[in-house]
Length: 307
Image 1: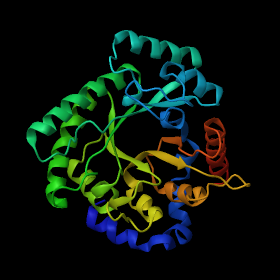
Image 2: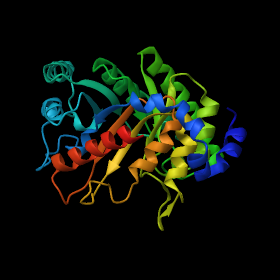
Image 3: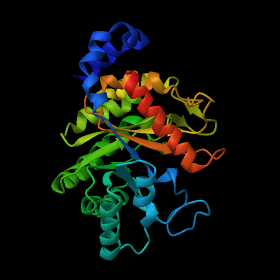
Image 4: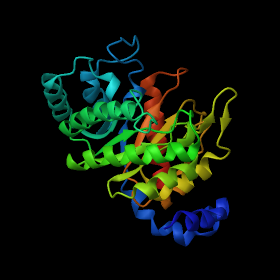
């Protein structure tokens, strides 16, 4: 669907969610096949060799995830040792096998921008992330996530041009390793759905899609300016979404998340025909991490059952 047509059609807004039930039912099957994974930030909140007092060792992560009822785990590059080597990867693969878990999404970003206007900086970032694509492939991941457009330093159309170049190059390398590349709405221009749709349509590669984050909608900083409707944002991005980050922080006594309407989100995600993984990402501090993870996973399961 061309960008202008899609945006015109999407003006139906929430009416489309309630009235186009026949359209939603077309994609009901994709919700029944969603696999729930756990993202490492739920259990480990420091990286680059730092110790998290309430966290776990990264090599214990597969066993802990399994004990919490997960069959799939995501990975994040900065949780691995700074001196990562083949032996580390062998241990992680062995630990995943022993725990009975499989790798889903490998999260990269934060070390250079693949959409940087400076060609030398962009090339260095691409070199960094190609290395992590190799790591993701060696761990048996299906997707590798990256971010671009989160730092606003040049006009949006100019940023789009460089992002297209960077995403194309990294995606082609990911394809050579059997991986899909997902770009996350991760603040800045990437939290503007129209910018992201333009990026997807211009790149137009089979192995490129979106990792939709429920809460990353900060368009600008100082003062903060947010995309006004996160539900509409997910709806607009839905045709390109292949995985989601199901963020959670606090829960009501009924087990509902206090800031995100999960039922509404997953109703919208019926319009995401390629959605495969729902990643539990609990970042709260008022209850234990294990408890928050459990509540989030159970909420997803409950919502999927009712949808």
